[in-house]
Each structure stands twice: as C-alpha cells, then as structure tokens.
Image 1 (cartoon, rainbow, N blue to C red):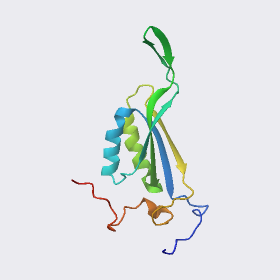
Image 2 (image 1 turned 60 degrees about the vertical axis):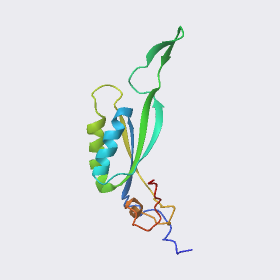
Image 3 (image 1 turned 90 degrees about the horizontal axis):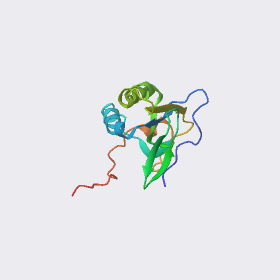
Length: 142
C-alpha cells in the first residue's frame, strides 16, 4: 500500500473548497450541466428532491378525490468547486434556472472542511482536479 497524504482538515484561515447546493426545476438541469462542463466544472451530484417554499401548493383531483400538493418536485445539485470558481458556477445556475416565476429554486454555499479522494487518499483541493490518465478508466464502448 502506498504512503497516505497527511491527515487533517484545511487550515482554519483558508477554506479553498466550497460546496454549492442548488435546488432547481428539472428542465434546467441539462443546460446547467452543459454550461458548467464547458467551463471545466463537469462534476456534480444530482438528487431528486421535494420541498415547499413560498410558492403555494396546487390542488388536483384523482378518481374524484381532491388533494392539495404542497411538496413540489425539484432537483438538488451538489457541486464542489475551488473558491475561485464559485461565482462562475453560481452565475451559470442563476442565468439558466431563472424563469422569473415562484419556484425557480435556491442556492446555498458551504465551506468544505476536508475533501478526500477515496481511491488514492489524496486530500485538499487536489481532489477537484481531473484524473490523470492512469489506465484505470473503464471503457464502456461497444
């Protein structure tokens, strides 16, 4: 087993990695992903989410029964970026998720105390860098 990099969080005075958590409408995902990838920020996690905010619920009828739906479907994007890339990523999300109607979503930005690449044990901002071609990539072509 190879030597592991030093253990420990980033120094208190610096938090070079941020987590952007954005709740958006489903239809905005593809454009946001494509634009972020073009800017060199292709990595993100996407989760189906439901939530309620200031927008009101809606009433629907199913087999004669009326019910009010307060939880609206959204997507939660989680993106880890270098501190210097936060504004570019947020600008993309704001531009492409905005419709002007209630329910466009929310964006939250968090400091990441530690980042670790599981495969190598590397720590810190280096985990956001592209993987070197190490021959470990799977080839899914047919």
